[in-house]
Image 1 (tube, rainbow over the protein chains, first blue to last red):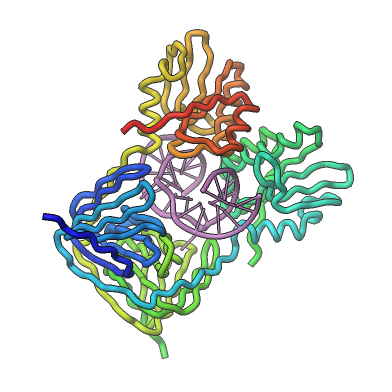
Image 2 (cartoon, rainbow over the protein chains, first blue to last red):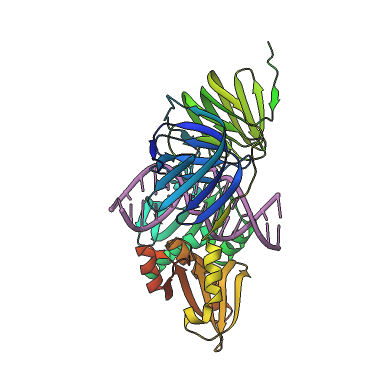
Length: 215
Length: 215
DNA sequence: AGTTCAGTGATGCGT
DNA sequence: ACGCATCGCTGAACT
Protein backbone atom coordinates (compact mmCIF):
# COMPACT_ATOMS: atom_id res chain seq x y z
CA UNK A 1 0.00 0.00 0.00
CA UNK A 2 1.28 3.43 -1.02
CA UNK A 3 0.95 6.38 1.32
CA UNK A 4 0.72 9.70 -0.47
CA UNK A 5 2.83 12.67 0.52
CA UNK A 6 1.11 15.93 1.34
CA UNK A 7 3.01 19.22 1.21
CA UNK A 8 2.65 21.28 4.41
CA UNK A 9 3.21 25.04 4.15
CA UNK A 10 1.14 26.13 7.14
CA UNK A 11 2.88 27.46 10.24
CA UNK A 12 2.05 25.33 13.25
CA UNK A 13 3.09 24.04 16.64
CA UNK A 14 2.80 20.39 17.51
CA UNK A 15 3.41 18.75 20.86
CA UNK A 16 3.77 15.05 20.32
CA UNK A 17 5.47 11.82 21.21
CA UNK A 18 7.84 11.08 18.38
CA UNK A 19 11.34 10.09 17.33
CA UNK A 20 13.57 12.12 15.00
CA UNK A 21 16.14 10.97 12.47
CA UNK A 22 18.47 13.42 10.73
CA UNK A 23 20.85 12.77 7.86
CA UNK A 24 22.90 15.44 6.14
CA UNK A 25 26.20 17.21 6.79
CA UNK A 26 26.12 15.32 10.08
CA UNK A 27 23.71 12.63 11.25
CA UNK A 28 21.74 12.15 14.43
CA UNK A 29 19.00 10.18 16.10
CA UNK A 30 16.69 11.27 18.86
CA UNK A 31 14.79 8.55 20.67
CA UNK A 32 11.04 8.60 21.32
CA UNK A 33 9.79 11.23 23.75
CA UNK A 34 7.53 14.26 24.02
CA UNK A 35 8.89 17.15 21.96
CA UNK A 36 7.65 20.49 20.73
CA UNK A 37 7.76 20.89 16.96
CA UNK A 38 7.56 24.38 15.49
CA UNK A 39 7.10 24.95 11.77
CA UNK A 40 7.22 28.34 10.01
CA UNK A 41 6.03 29.02 6.49
CA UNK A 42 9.57 29.87 5.34
CA UNK A 43 10.38 26.18 5.85
CA UNK A 44 12.03 26.52 9.25
CA UNK A 45 11.31 23.57 11.50
CA UNK A 46 12.57 23.06 15.04
CA UNK A 47 12.28 20.16 17.47
CA UNK A 48 12.67 21.34 21.07
CA UNK A 49 13.26 19.25 24.16
CA UNK A 50 12.23 20.24 27.69
CA UNK A 51 15.48 22.03 28.44
CA UNK A 52 18.21 24.13 26.82
CA UNK A 53 17.87 27.03 24.46
CA UNK A 54 18.82 25.37 21.19
CA UNK A 55 16.54 22.93 19.40
CA UNK A 56 17.53 19.27 19.37
CA UNK A 57 16.99 19.13 15.63
CA UNK A 58 16.08 21.74 13.07
CA UNK A 59 16.03 22.79 9.47
CA UNK A 60 16.75 26.40 8.51
CA UNK A 61 14.57 28.44 6.08
CA UNK A 62 14.12 26.88 2.66
CA UNK A 63 13.30 23.37 3.81
CA UNK A 64 10.24 21.65 2.31
CA UNK A 65 7.88 19.85 4.66
CA UNK A 66 5.77 16.87 3.64
CA UNK A 67 3.44 14.65 5.61
CA UNK A 68 3.25 10.95 4.85
CA UNK A 69 0.97 9.08 7.18
CA UNK A 70 2.30 9.66 10.69
CA UNK A 71 5.69 10.85 9.46
CA UNK A 72 6.76 14.42 8.87
CA UNK A 73 9.63 14.77 6.39
CA UNK A 74 11.55 18.02 6.03
CA UNK A 75 14.05 18.20 3.17
CA UNK A 76 16.60 20.81 2.15
CA UNK A 77 19.53 20.28 -0.21
CA UNK A 78 21.27 17.18 1.14
CA UNK A 79 19.65 17.38 4.56
CA UNK A 80 16.62 15.42 5.66
CA UNK A 81 14.72 15.14 8.92
CA UNK A 82 12.13 12.44 9.54
CA UNK A 83 9.78 12.77 12.48
CA UNK A 84 7.84 9.63 13.32
CA UNK A 85 4.84 10.68 15.38
CA UNK A 86 3.11 8.13 17.60
CA UNK A 87 0.88 10.36 19.71
CA UNK A 88 -0.28 13.92 19.11
CA UNK A 89 -0.79 15.68 22.44
CA UNK A 90 -1.59 18.92 20.85
CA UNK A 91 -1.66 20.69 17.47
CA UNK A 92 -2.32 24.31 16.62
CA UNK A 93 -1.93 26.29 13.40
CA UNK A 94 -0.59 29.81 13.74
CA UNK A 95 -1.92 32.61 11.59
CA UNK A 96 -0.84 36.24 11.22
CA UNK A 97 2.60 35.47 12.64
CA UNK A 98 4.64 38.69 12.51
CA UNK A 99 7.94 39.06 10.69
CA UNK A 100 9.17 42.21 12.40
CA UNK A 101 12.91 42.61 12.65
CA UNK A 102 14.57 43.20 15.96
CA UNK A 103 16.68 46.28 16.53
CA UNK A 104 19.89 45.58 18.46
CA UNK A 105 22.32 48.17 19.79
CA UNK A 106 25.68 47.88 21.54
CA UNK A 107 27.08 45.66 18.81
CA UNK A 108 30.67 45.55 17.69
CA UNK A 109 29.97 48.06 14.93
CA UNK A 110 28.61 50.52 17.52
CA UNK A 111 31.82 50.18 19.51
CA UNK A 112 33.91 50.46 16.37
CA UNK A 113 32.13 53.67 15.34
CA UNK A 114 32.57 55.18 18.78
CA UNK A 115 36.27 54.37 18.77
CA UNK A 116 36.70 55.64 15.21
CA UNK A 117 35.05 58.95 16.09
CA UNK A 118 37.50 59.49 18.96
CA UNK A 119 40.67 58.05 17.47
CA UNK A 120 43.26 60.74 18.21
CA UNK A 121 42.10 61.09 21.79
CA UNK A 122 41.93 57.35 22.50
CA UNK A 123 45.27 56.55 20.85
CA UNK A 124 46.95 59.73 22.19
CA UNK A 125 48.51 60.13 18.75
CA UNK A 126 48.18 62.60 15.92
CA UNK A 127 46.21 60.61 13.35
CA UNK A 128 46.27 62.00 9.84
CA UNK A 129 44.46 59.22 8.01
CA UNK A 130 41.98 56.56 9.12
CA UNK A 131 39.74 53.82 7.72
CA UNK A 132 36.95 51.56 8.91
CA UNK A 133 36.80 47.99 7.58
CA UNK A 134 40.03 48.42 5.64
CA UNK A 135 40.28 45.62 3.10
CA UNK A 136 43.35 43.42 2.78
CA UNK A 137 43.87 39.97 1.20
CA UNK A 138 44.03 38.54 4.73
CA UNK A 139 40.75 40.02 5.93
CA UNK A 140 39.16 43.36 6.77
CA UNK A 141 40.73 45.45 9.50
CA UNK A 142 38.24 47.04 11.90
CA UNK A 143 40.17 50.31 12.06
CA UNK A 144 43.38 51.30 10.33
CA UNK A 145 44.94 54.63 11.32
CA UNK A 146 48.14 56.38 10.22
CA UNK A 147 49.88 59.08 12.26
CA UNK A 148 52.02 61.97 11.04
CA UNK A 149 55.18 59.85 11.39
CA UNK A 150 53.67 57.24 9.04
CA UNK A 151 53.12 54.71 11.81
CA UNK A 152 50.30 52.25 11.04
CA UNK A 153 47.84 51.54 13.85
CA UNK A 154 46.11 48.23 13.27
CA UNK A 155 43.11 48.04 15.57
CA UNK A 156 40.92 45.02 16.27
CA UNK A 157 37.65 45.67 18.11
CA UNK A 158 35.64 43.12 20.07
CA UNK A 159 32.27 43.81 21.65
CA UNK A 160 32.80 41.11 24.26
CA UNK A 161 35.83 39.45 25.73
CA UNK A 162 38.93 39.32 23.52
CA UNK A 163 40.65 35.91 23.35
CA UNK A 164 43.55 34.09 21.66
CA UNK A 165 41.71 34.06 18.35
CA UNK A 166 41.49 37.86 18.55
CA UNK A 167 45.28 38.07 19.00
CA UNK A 168 45.88 35.78 16.03
CA UNK A 169 43.49 37.76 13.88
CA UNK A 170 45.33 40.98 14.73
CA UNK A 171 48.67 39.32 14.07
CA UNK A 172 47.51 38.26 10.61
CA UNK A 173 46.57 41.84 9.71
CA UNK A 174 49.71 43.25 11.27
CA UNK A 175 52.03 40.90 9.37
CA UNK A 176 50.47 42.04 6.14
CA UNK A 177 51.76 45.60 6.73
CA UNK A 178 55.08 44.48 8.17
CA UNK A 179 55.66 42.45 4.99
CA UNK A 180 55.25 45.60 2.89
CA UNK A 181 57.70 47.50 5.09
CA UNK A 182 55.45 49.56 7.35
CA UNK A 183 55.93 50.48 10.99
CA UNK A 184 53.02 48.88 12.75
CA UNK A 185 51.40 49.26 16.17
CA UNK A 186 48.87 46.62 17.13
CA UNK A 187 45.83 47.36 19.27
CA UNK A 188 43.13 45.20 20.78
CA UNK A 189 40.13 47.22 21.92
CA UNK A 190 37.38 45.58 23.97
CA UNK A 191 35.58 45.73 27.31
CA UNK A 192 37.50 42.66 28.55
CA UNK A 193 40.23 40.18 27.62
CA UNK A 194 40.98 36.60 28.66
CA UNK A 195 44.08 35.99 30.78
CA UNK A 196 45.78 33.89 28.11
CA UNK A 197 45.06 36.51 25.48
CA UNK A 198 46.42 39.26 27.74
CA UNK A 199 49.65 37.29 28.16
CA UNK A 200 49.90 36.54 24.46
CA UNK A 201 49.30 40.19 23.61
CA UNK A 202 52.06 41.31 25.98
CA UNK A 203 54.55 38.87 24.51
CA UNK A 204 53.71 39.90 20.96
CA UNK A 205 53.73 43.68 21.37
CA UNK A 206 49.99 44.03 21.07
CA UNK A 207 48.55 46.85 23.12
CA UNK A 208 45.31 46.21 24.95
CA UNK A 209 42.89 49.10 25.44
CA UNK A 210 39.95 48.52 27.74
CA UNK A 211 36.85 50.42 26.64
CA UNK A 212 33.22 50.21 27.63
CA UNK A 213 30.16 50.64 25.48
CA UNK A 214 28.77 54.12 25.70
CA UNK A 215 25.15 54.11 26.86
CA UNK B 1 -1.95 50.58 42.97
CA UNK B 2 0.72 47.86 43.31
CA UNK B 3 0.72 44.83 41.02
CA UNK B 4 2.18 41.73 42.64
CA UNK B 5 4.76 39.57 40.87
CA UNK B 6 4.05 35.89 40.44
CA UNK B 7 6.87 33.43 39.79
CA UNK B 8 6.24 31.18 36.76
CA UNK B 9 8.04 27.83 36.64
CA UNK B 10 5.65 25.95 34.39
CA UNK B 11 6.67 25.09 30.83
CA UNK B 12 4.28 26.67 28.35
CA UNK B 13 3.74 28.02 24.87
CA UNK B 14 1.99 31.32 24.35
CA UNK B 15 0.95 32.87 21.06
CA UNK B 16 0.20 36.51 21.67
CA UNK B 17 0.36 40.05 20.46
CA UNK B 18 3.13 41.70 22.43
CA UNK B 19 6.23 43.86 22.37
CA UNK B 20 9.61 42.84 23.76
CA UNK B 21 12.34 44.90 25.42
CA UNK B 22 15.75 43.46 26.20
CA UNK B 23 18.59 44.98 28.21
CA UNK B 24 21.85 43.18 28.98
CA UNK B 25 25.09 42.51 27.10
CA UNK B 26 23.39 44.29 24.23
CA UNK B 27 19.98 45.98 24.08
CA UNK B 28 17.07 45.54 21.73
CA UNK B 29 13.47 46.39 21.11
CA UNK B 30 10.90 44.43 19.17
CA UNK B 31 7.73 46.27 18.20
CA UNK B 32 4.21 44.94 18.76
CA UNK B 33 3.21 41.91 16.72
CA UNK B 34 2.14 38.30 17.02
CA UNK B 35 4.94 36.14 18.37
CA UNK B 36 5.34 32.65 19.77
CA UNK B 37 6.73 32.52 23.29
CA UNK B 38 8.18 29.24 24.56
CA UNK B 39 9.10 28.76 28.20
CA UNK B 40 10.87 25.71 29.65
CA UNK B 41 11.14 24.84 33.32
CA UNK B 42 14.93 25.29 33.27
CA UNK B 43 14.28 29.00 32.74
CA UNK B 44 14.79 29.05 28.98
CA UNK B 45 12.47 31.46 27.21
CA UNK B 46 12.34 32.18 23.49
CA UNK B 47 10.38 34.67 21.42
CA UNK B 48 9.99 33.48 17.83
CA UNK B 49 8.86 35.48 14.84
CA UNK B 50 7.18 34.02 11.75
CA UNK B 51 10.44 33.38 9.93
CA UNK B 52 14.07 32.42 10.48
CA UNK B 53 15.48 29.68 12.63
CA UNK B 54 16.77 31.71 15.56
CA UNK B 55 14.47 33.33 18.10
CA UNK B 56 14.16 37.12 18.03
CA UNK B 57 14.81 37.26 21.77
CA UNK B 58 15.63 34.64 24.36
CA UNK B 59 17.03 33.83 27.75
CA UNK B 60 19.16 30.73 28.25
CA UNK B 61 18.67 28.22 31.11
CA UNK B 62 18.82 29.76 34.58
CA UNK B 63 16.58 32.73 33.91
CA UNK B 64 13.77 33.47 36.37
CA UNK B 65 10.35 34.23 34.96
CA UNK B 66 7.81 36.41 36.75
CA UNK B 67 4.38 37.62 35.72
CA UNK B 68 3.23 41.09 36.68
CA UNK B 69 -0.17 41.97 35.29
CA UNK B 70 0.13 41.66 31.52
CA UNK B 71 3.93 41.74 31.57
CA UNK B 72 6.26 38.75 31.60
CA UNK B 73 9.70 39.51 33.03
CA UNK B 74 12.59 37.10 32.60
CA UNK B 75 15.77 37.91 34.52
CA UNK B 76 19.21 36.36 34.56
CA UNK B 77 22.41 37.94 35.86
CA UNK B 78 22.53 41.32 34.15
CA UNK B 79 20.05 40.42 31.44
CA UNK B 80 16.38 41.23 31.47
CA UNK B 81 13.55 40.70 29.00
CA UNK B 82 10.16 42.36 29.38
CA UNK B 83 7.26 41.11 27.32
CA UNK B 84 4.23 43.38 27.29
CA UNK B 85 1.27 41.27 26.24
CA UNK B 86 -1.82 42.97 24.81
CA UNK B 87 -3.73 40.03 23.39
CA UNK B 88 -3.40 36.31 24.15
CA UNK B 89 -4.32 34.28 21.05
CA UNK B 90 -3.46 31.06 22.62
CA UNK B 91 -1.88 29.55 25.75
CA UNK B 92 -0.98 25.96 26.57
CA UNK B 93 1.02 24.40 29.40
CA UNK B 94 3.29 21.52 28.47
CA UNK B 95 3.72 18.55 30.78
CA UNK B 96 6.02 15.52 30.59
CA UNK B 97 8.36 17.29 28.19
CA UNK B 98 11.30 14.95 27.48
CA UNK B 99 14.94 15.78 28.15
CA UNK B 100 16.57 13.16 25.95
CA UNK B 101 19.97 14.00 24.52
CA UNK B 102 20.64 13.78 20.83
CA UNK B 103 23.39 11.61 19.40
CA UNK B 104 25.35 13.25 16.59
CA UNK B 105 27.94 11.66 14.33
CA UNK B 106 30.23 13.09 11.61
CA UNK B 107 31.52 15.73 13.99
CA UNK B 108 35.01 17.19 13.99
CA UNK B 109 36.11 14.72 16.64
CA UNK B 110 35.01 11.83 14.41
CA UNK B 111 37.16 13.20 11.61
CA UNK B 112 40.03 13.81 14.02
CA UNK B 113 39.86 10.23 15.30
CA UNK B 114 39.79 8.84 11.78
CA UNK B 115 42.82 10.90 10.81
CA UNK B 116 44.64 10.01 14.02
CA UNK B 117 44.08 6.28 13.44
CA UNK B 118 45.62 6.53 9.96
CA UNK B 119 48.38 9.05 10.61
CA UNK B 120 51.42 7.40 9.00
CA UNK B 121 49.48 6.53 5.88
CA UNK B 122 47.83 9.94 5.49
CA UNK B 123 51.00 11.92 6.20
CA UNK B 124 53.20 9.48 4.27
CA UNK B 125 55.71 9.74 7.10
CA UNK B 126 57.04 7.41 9.76
CA UNK B 127 55.32 8.71 12.88
CA UNK B 128 56.83 7.55 16.16
CA UNK B 129 54.79 9.63 18.60
CA UNK B 130 51.35 11.23 18.38
CA UNK B 131 48.80 13.08 20.50
CA UNK B 132 45.21 14.22 20.26
CA UNK B 133 44.23 17.57 21.78
CA UNK B 134 47.82 18.36 22.72
CA UNK B 135 47.80 21.18 25.25
CA UNK B 136 49.90 24.32 24.85
CA UNK B 137 49.63 27.78 26.41
CA UNK B 138 48.29 29.03 23.08
CA UNK B 139 45.51 26.48 22.76
CA UNK B 140 44.99 22.77 22.21
CA UNK B 141 46.32 21.22 19.01
CA UNK B 142 43.95 18.77 17.33
CA UNK B 143 46.76 16.36 16.44
CA UNK B 144 50.48 16.60 17.14
CA UNK B 145 52.72 13.96 15.57
CA UNK B 146 56.50 13.46 15.61
CA UNK B 147 58.40 11.44 13.01
CA UNK B 148 61.64 9.51 13.40
CA UNK B 149 63.66 12.57 12.32
CA UNK B 150 62.07 14.59 15.15
CA UNK B 151 59.94 16.68 12.80
CA UNK B 152 56.80 18.03 14.48
CA UNK B 153 53.56 17.75 12.50
CA UNK B 154 51.04 20.29 13.75
CA UNK B 155 47.64 19.35 12.40
CA UNK B 156 44.45 21.40 12.51
CA UNK B 157 41.23 19.59 11.62
CA UNK B 158 37.97 21.19 10.45
CA UNK B 159 34.75 19.30 9.83
CA UNK B 160 33.57 21.94 7.37
CA UNK B 161 35.33 24.52 5.25
CA UNK B 162 38.70 25.78 6.50
CA UNK B 163 39.13 29.57 6.38
CA UNK B 164 41.63 32.31 7.26
CA UNK B 165 40.92 31.90 10.96
CA UNK B 166 41.92 28.24 10.61
CA UNK B 167 45.26 29.28 9.09
CA UNK B 168 45.90 31.75 11.91
CA UNK B 169 45.00 29.18 14.52
CA UNK B 170 47.48 26.73 13.00
CA UNK B 171 50.14 29.44 12.79
CA UNK B 172 49.71 30.21 16.50
CA UNK B 173 50.30 26.57 17.43
CA UNK B 174 53.15 26.24 14.96
CA UNK B 175 54.99 29.31 16.27
CA UNK B 176 54.88 27.85 19.73
CA UNK B 177 57.08 24.94 18.61
CA UNK B 178 59.27 27.07 16.36
CA UNK B 179 59.99 29.30 19.36
CA UNK B 180 61.30 26.31 21.29
CA UNK B 181 63.52 25.25 18.38
CA UNK B 182 61.55 22.48 16.73
CA UNK B 183 61.28 21.63 13.04
CA UNK B 184 57.61 22.05 12.28
CA UNK B 185 55.33 21.00 9.43
CA UNK B 186 51.89 22.57 9.38
CA UNK B 187 48.80 20.75 8.12
CA UNK B 188 45.21 21.78 7.56
CA UNK B 189 42.88 18.81 7.20
CA UNK B 190 39.28 19.33 6.11
CA UNK B 191 36.76 18.45 3.41
CA UNK B 192 37.07 21.95 1.90
CA UNK B 193 38.97 25.23 2.15
CA UNK B 194 38.15 28.80 1.14
CA UNK B 195 40.15 30.34 -1.70
CA UNK B 196 41.76 33.00 0.52
CA UNK B 197 42.74 30.37 3.04
CA UNK B 198 44.22 28.17 0.33
CA UNK B 199 46.32 31.10 -0.87
CA UNK B 200 47.39 32.04 2.64
CA UNK B 201 48.30 28.44 3.41
CA UNK B 202 50.46 28.19 0.30
CA UNK B 203 52.32 31.40 1.12
CA UNK B 204 52.91 30.32 4.71
CA UNK B 205 54.08 26.77 4.11
CA UNK B 206 50.91 25.19 5.41
CA UNK B 207 49.98 21.96 3.70
CA UNK B 208 46.32 21.40 2.89
CA UNK B 209 44.99 17.85 2.93
CA UNK B 210 41.50 17.29 1.61
CA UNK B 211 39.67 14.50 3.43
CA UNK B 212 36.05 13.44 3.55
CA UNK B 213 34.05 12.07 6.41
CA UNK B 214 33.86 8.29 6.41
CA UNK B 215 30.30 6.96 6.33
C1' DA C 1 34.49 30.41 37.99
C1' DG C 2 37.25 31.10 33.54
C1' DT C 3 38.93 29.64 28.86
C1' DT C 4 38.82 27.17 24.83
C1' DC C 5 36.51 25.61 20.70
C1' DA C 6 32.85 23.14 17.93
C1' DG C 7 28.44 23.92 15.62
C1' DT C 8 23.89 20.38 10.78
C1' DG C 9 26.27 26.71 13.87
C1' DA C 10 22.67 30.82 11.77
C1' DT C 11 22.50 35.25 9.79
C1' DG C 12 23.82 39.32 7.30
C1' DC C 13 26.63 41.72 4.12
C1' DG C 14 29.74 42.00 0.74
C1' DT C 15 31.63 40.59 -3.98
C1' DA D 1 26.50 31.98 -5.64
C1' DC D 2 30.74 32.23 -2.52
C1' DG D 3 33.47 34.39 1.01
C1' DC D 4 33.80 36.43 5.34
C1' DA D 5 32.69 38.14 10.04
C1' DT D 6 29.56 38.70 13.80
C1' DC D 7 26.61 36.70 17.41
C1' DG D 8 23.20 38.98 23.73
C1' DC D 9 25.94 33.32 19.83
C1' DT D 10 24.89 28.32 22.79
C1' DG D 11 26.83 24.43 24.74
C1' DA D 12 30.36 21.31 26.28
C1' DA D 13 34.66 20.01 28.19
C1' DC D 14 38.39 20.99 30.86
C1' DT D 15 41.24 23.74 34.36
